[in-house]
Length: 276
Image (cartoon, rainbow, N blue to C red; front, side, top):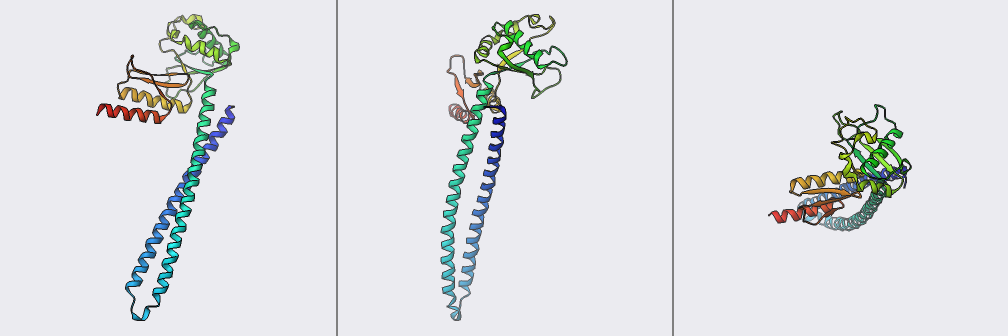
């Protein structure tokens, strides 16, 4: 699935969500109007009944008919509300399924990428070709057998947070998953390499260099939440592997896979019960 297709699907999904919210608001207003109409009619009928005298007994029949009309309206409104609620449920399920499809497509696309942090720029106006070659040199320096033909594109991206002193992150997209897996298998060696092997000056520091999974925006948000859970609940480990997020309480404990926010909420509830 192409990037443009994913972008188009996202836009469609967002529009559907807005439509659902609009329908929900109309639904709430409809319910309020029905309740208001019932209250007003009942009050008017009660006031009219209390004002009856012997000369206005005929109005009882009118009030009875009005009550019957109100009763029919009430039943009809309930049926309409039920149908509307059913349509909303179906529409919401479709949107959710579409959202999951988009997430899976994005996850598959990102599975060919790695994100590199703390890599000094080779020049002030580093081109994509220069960035790609820098990546190849670094990958080989850490112990992977990668050539420039294994790289689709590599480029610098704007960091989420920056104080201006750190180099821009690199997103490197591979042509082959196997080449990416080679790099990820030896990525821990990046801080140990001689920078000159990657075409950088000997004085270059690799202290903050790292190679990571390139997560989709949604997965990145989930990782942030998982890391917060880790620090708040005294978990020792939080990491990603093949874009999947894991938590582990201790070195001996089992790894817990975190697929979505629901998994985190379940874990929070379990942790709360243990601590209580």
